[in-house]
Length: 252
Image (cartoon, rainbow, N blue to C red; front, side, top):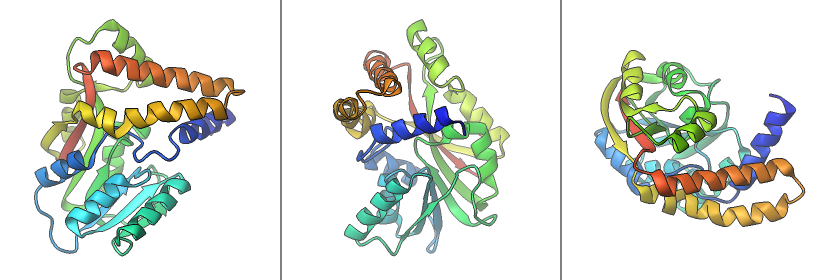
């Protein structure tokens, strides 16, 4: 990783510091997706990849009583999750692991369910699905959220923005086709409601931006990140019907 990439990652972590989630989402959407995947046997093992501070790890543990292994590369997120798990009496169900999602130190066929909210883009949707498949037991299930086009002809303004911010962004149909090509059965897909963007993410991020600018006022890269974040929020406010986060619910 180059020095510039390290700086960029550091600034992103600082911008999202102390936020409950690192991407749009909510406990209600997590549980809706979980229930759509069907019941899980007693003793099931869940792997939450890119867990961040662990909102979905906690929701999964609460709902299922299953063993949850929560993975992230940023130790402060894992420390925060451990604190919250202890406060809720869930420490016995949740194990944290500092690891790279692309180089996971787990044996093949170790998990019944792989979960990932707002993080699959870091590896790329297709690569992540193929890389993680080995970790699922036969018949195992997967739930990932991925930002996706919801309309075949989005306005040029937002297409231009996302072609730079995330050029791999595809339609729902394109992602479902890729999942089938990677050896999965598509169980269902669910579009996250707008409230998951605002109540679960952007409202916190908007408040955090003011503090971030104060802390890094002498840092030009920080201001570039802040301006890009403001542009992203403004575009979603105007064009949310054209794109959104989608839960892809899959079975091996």
